[in-house]
Image 1 (cartoon, rainbow, N blue to C red):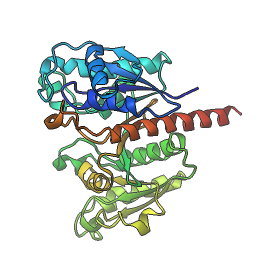
Image 2: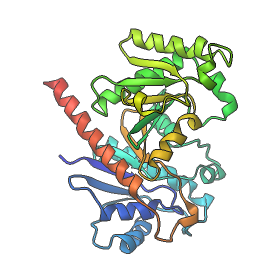
Image 3: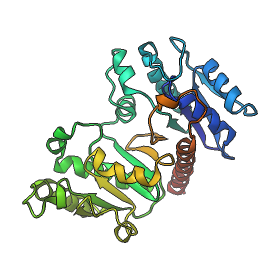
Image 4: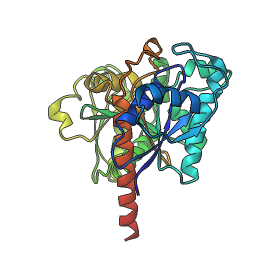
Length: 319
C-alpha cells in the first residue's frame, strides 16, 4: 500500500497553501497526499499553481477571509484545528504520517491560545512525555537537547536524566524510522571548547559526560562531548549518523547553511511519523507565486521513506 500522508497547510496567510499546491504538481509517484485545510483556499491555490493536479482535501474551514502576508488572530484556532485533523486522519487509519507546513506562533498566541511550536503541541496531543526535534539536510542530522527556550534557561534545563532520555529516543527512532541498524551519535558540549576541562563551565563534567557514559552502558553508541565549533567537520561527520546539540542555535545554523530550502524537521519520540519544512511562513513573499516547495518535497519524501521503513521493521518483528 502506498504511504498516505496528511499535509497540514499551515498559516493560511503564509506560503503554506502555495507550496502545498506546488507540491501536487511534483507529487512523487507511489505516495498519496491529503491536503488538510480550507477547501476554497486550497482549490484557489491549486488552480493557480497545479491546474492539472487531482486534489484530495480534508476540509477545515477558515474563521475569517485570508489576505496573503497579513496575519489574522481570528484564524489562530484554525491552524491548530488542521493539526488536530491530521492526527485524526492517522487515528482513523486514513493516513500513515503527518507533514506540516509552517505556522506563525505569534498569531496563535495572539488568539489567546498558548503555543510554543509544532513539536510541543503534537507531544501534548499524543500524550507523549518527551520528544526530540531533529533537523536533516545537506547530509546532516542534528537533534536538539532543548528546543524553543531562551538561551538563559538552557543550562538549568539540562540534566543527566534528560540527556539520557534524549539519547534513547534518538537511538530508537534512528533505528525504527530511519532504518539505521547501529546509530552513531556525536554529542556537543554546552560551553566553548566543551568546557575546556571545567575552566569554561562544568556542565560537560557534571551532566553531559555522565549522560553519555550512562547511554553507552545501555548499548547506545554516543561520543563526546565535542566542541560545537569543531564537530561539524567531514572527518568527524563521516562516522556519525546524528549530532546532538544542546540548544537550538548551537546546531541549526550549520545545518541550515548546508541545506536551507531543502532541509526537513522531524519530531522523534512521537507514536506517529511527523516531518516538516525547515523554514517559516515567509509572509513577505506570500501570494506572489515565488515560494519554493523544495523543503516540503523533501519532507514528503522523508515521511514516505519512514513509513516504508517502519512497515518493514514491523513485518520483520512479526516474522
